[in-house]
Image (cartoon, rainbow, N blue to C red; front, side, top):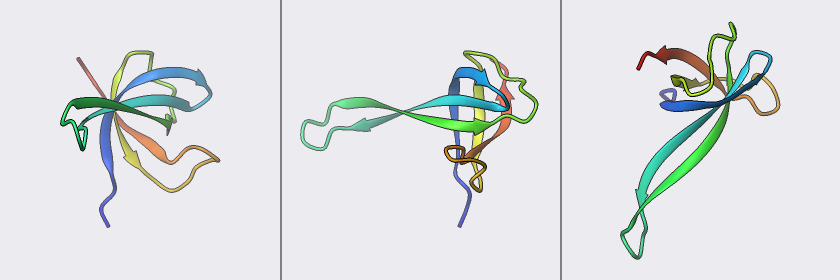
Length: 79
């Protein structure tokens, strides 16, 4: 089974080696067909503490690292 990869924005970097990334996806409402923006927050392992607030990053699913961390940082996207 392939590993999930996604892109999001860093919303918190206050923890040691951990960042919180908000991933926004747009879906259509089943009945009314209106486009809704859904936001999921993921705890991401950042080994070198290089990410800052507002950075756009690529993340990948991984084995459980702690109670909440299930994703790891692949790269920062330079915008």
